Image (cartoon, rainbow, N blue to C red; front, side, top):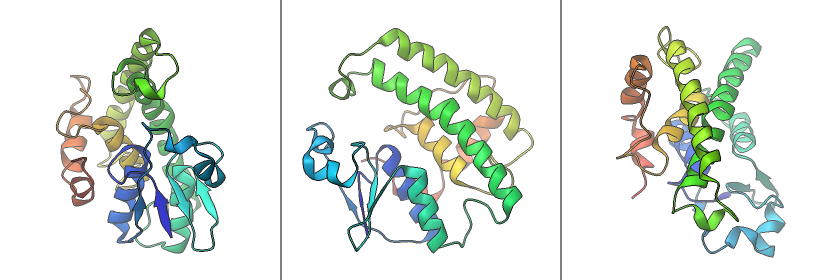
Length: 208
């Protein structure tokens, strides 16, 4: 198996953190997005959506979408569990994963893609006003997550899970040394972030 994508950047990094936590070794094959490698016929044959990461199996079968890849690997390597041990726990983890993905990840991704010079080659037209609006939506979601973390050590409950990986990488983006500024009132979220950012899996996958 191999994963097409950057081990220390974007959604591919979420998988890299997951692999570190699970003790699974799968090599990463870099894909140069700035040069449009994800739009070449060779890459599109692996994933018609033109997105990374992509898991390529030994027989050539390819799986796109980060969560789908993690679910596949979870079936192969169920311990330690990152997506739930029983139907209720799996549902709870999925609920909070979706809250993070649609309430923070999607918004902060739009903010970066629409406002940063770095992301300009990836967008046909940047709309800074749309980016700023998405940032405001993300701040609202972070305040909701702060309330959740007031009574839980991690996003979905007592255990570090895929939801925590998604949220941590959202906040760090490509700059762990200069993360996204959290709302000043979110003391529980700040406590969580300070703890999670020190985990060996996040440290090992930090961008150079």
